[in-house]
Image 1 (cartoon, rainbow, N blue to C red):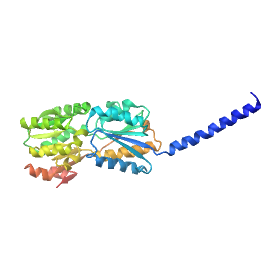
Image 2 (tube, rainbow, N blue to C red):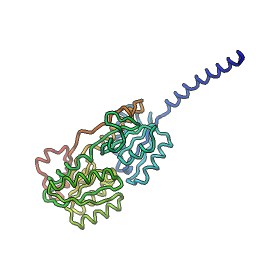
Image 3 (cartoon, helix red, strand yellow):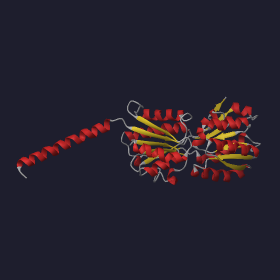
Image 4 (cartoon, helix red, strand yellow):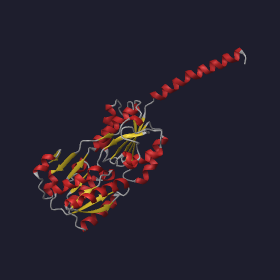
Length: 330
């Protein structure tokens, strides 16, 4: 190679080296896109989206200014999850925020490169989402909000509120099998110790909720226990309306259920869980490695009671239970 040819090769190499950082900086300066995937419906999940944005804002990201969000809602339809995950991957989102075990597991199975921040009720280690809580070890981390783990205590509180109840109808979503199984196992073990009989009903669509209610009313259930599930959260107005129509005391997993007219709820705050998801998404956008971000475990549980609903049902809330309540809705 002549000296002239060597000079040309060197100049070409130098030019290429100069172009790469410019391209990299241009890519980094582009607005990152977050894919938000929820098992709920857009309307009922509005407050959760607001909480997600709040968490992102705490991390320094404001939608429309320095971050964009692609929203996907499965509306309780499991058959739509894989398609929505694939769409977010095709769009090359920077992070996937997955609210619910079904969407989180599907996202985890679909990509090992895009970071995932999940919010799940079950143990994420048992689900296979992370290697351990302190060191997730892969592309996923998030929030474990312990809704499923407090089902036994929630049944006990329902027993205190409705002491005359004997037969309790339990609504489960078969489309969320791990959650439904753990809820059923916990309640089958707890019910006999409280002198209760539990009867399980499956529903994964609005029509199936109507069918389940017709059956549990026909079988003269004394109270309703709604399993912890994103689909039921999105159908809380339908559930509380049916419970009121049939004068049935109903217990839900989240405060939103009580705000919609349910009798009581006991569990962690799903709203705050979404805020924490947003905060973790923001940290990852700033460069944090999900493999090293410990799973956050919610430790604060809240008991919410709707006094107006109790009065309509002819129930007197025990003073000791009122004193324990974190919030009483008049």
